[in-house]
Length: 426
Image (cartoon, rainbow, N blue to C red; front, side, top):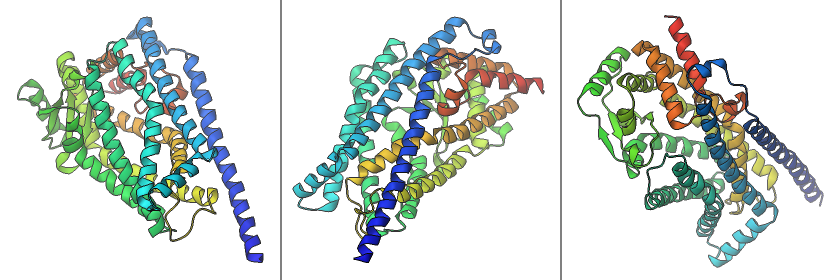
């Protein structure tokens, strides 16, 4: 009797702590969202440097386009988070999971898989209008998309199928680990995630990316010669430079560095090669070599792995406080806790944005500096950032809070300023 009373009091204290923690998480997210909306609506002062390269029409068009995209993304986030909170707080998640368990004949993993598919479909359903609006309708209205509706649907279904498969496998592995290692599943989950992040980075260029685009090796010619010369200056053995048929979907131009080991490569959009000057293309290639030279892929992986372990440790703690009476050591967690986990993912991923983006912005600054060292052409770097910002409707000078919270790259005006500053030091 005394033990039962003690356990009840302990559970009550745990639930009280959980309520405080959830309240803090929700409050912080609500505060950041309120500030985000405020600074989206109130335009910041535009630095005088901007007017040397852009017109007021450039600034206003980019701001209006980004406003539409950001509010669409925010509404999708709120819709998914709201759905998950309703499923949890109303008890519908637990009722649905119990019903699926009965229908499956109490076969735990079958029921967990079916419950995951149901929740996944509900989340996809509430996010679909925003996804379709921002990635198809808006892109056509602003003259970016070159896709047909049929092509968009093919991409959407392929991406959704991959997400369903990989997320489903991850979910089943997670719930299996909670039963197999009741007090250390967080470490196992972190190791599994780390393994998958390495595998995904290695396989993405050769397995997943080709499902959506065609890639061809860069042909012999002036650009190939320039790449060889830059790689020699950088002290890199760059064997793989590929051209992606981005123009079949968009008029936007870009480039990226991806892969590990033998799959490491630089990828250039075909419309970058077609629409930008040789000097601007050289600046882009040099920038991607900067990522390569600085080891940013490996560093990003390491940060991601560390972040994964921190996430699972926090999740382990908050689940034990939130559902102490439902967690039985030696048995997998109840399927309906998937909804609680997804709420935690939604809140933590939003709060962690500034950290991940700050690390990414630092890497972009480093890559820009390496590019300037390799090319010695600061004017081309400035022209590149001006051209990209104007062509892709990047917001040229966002509010500092918006940049801090959501920007993975420095704002265009900062990159221009940095390029000019580096040039002054030559």
